[in-house]
Amino acid sequence: MRAILVVNPQATSTTAGGRDVLAHALASQVKLDVVETDYRGHALAVARSAARDGFDLVVAHGGDGTVNEVVNGLLADSAGAPGRSGSVPMLGVVPGGSANVFARAVGLPADPVEATHQLLTALETERSRRIGLGLADGHWFTFNAGLGWDADVVGRVAKRRGKQTSASLYLRAAVRSYFRPPLGRPALTVRIPGEEPAEAVTAFVSNTDPWTYLGERPVHLNSGCSFETGLGLFALNGLRLPTVFTHVRQALLTESDQRGRRLLRRDDVPLIRIDAAEPVNFQVDGDLVGQRTRVEFQSVPDALTVVG
Image (cartoon, rainbow, N blue to C red; front, top):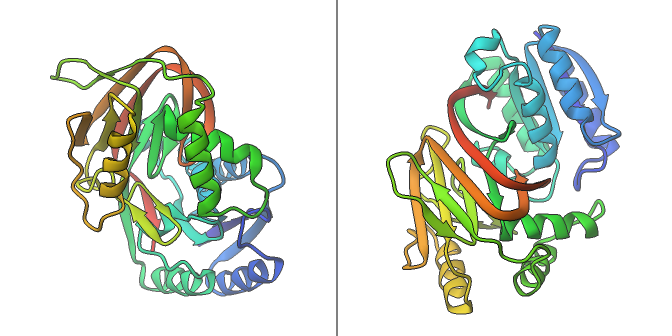
């Protein structure tokens, strides 16, 4: 088996020693190349080359941004339909970031050493699973995407964080973005096939549950969403403080089932289109992509094979 280990040395919990241990362990089972990323988009370029060169496995060691880049590289030639692109390398993940939402969602331990052991065991026993992904404006996402408030938060955090980040940083950014939204609160129109258009001011789209983590606490927006279903939609048509407090409380409850009169929530949706009256921030997997006035979110079943 030919494999590439993609390491982001700037991720929160990656170290040179950890990289060497991981590489040594993997090299005992596969023919391994190791690449350290040194610019934004490097992991995507490496994974795209690996797919074109017929590699069997690409292992991402870093945070959710690194995983997202690798996924987008693996599927770069798929034109939104992975089955048409021939054989796509399998994905392996060893968490090295702060939140590691995707790694947790597929059942990997937070500790890189334990995750490496699980990955090696899975390779030895040929254990893997097919997962569905989301596709939004040409960007693949593994666990969430959004327009409005959450993207504003992501943009604020990106400007302030270095190698270290924390739940408190996200909380502060959420509060500041609530009271001082950088682009205001343009009206959003949400369109789902077979339904009447609905108005909103912020929209969260999930590919699995939890939507994210606040430290060790999972945040549930669409508890009926998983890698085996369609997308989840959580959109609010108002952001007054009572509405926000209600849904934050529900989101932090175990097995939360979000409800509210300001809430438009759907689980297992194949397609969602959101139009904005003016440009709004747009994020995928916790990275700010830019500003958009229209985004179509599509569920793509059985898009990728994950080892683990």
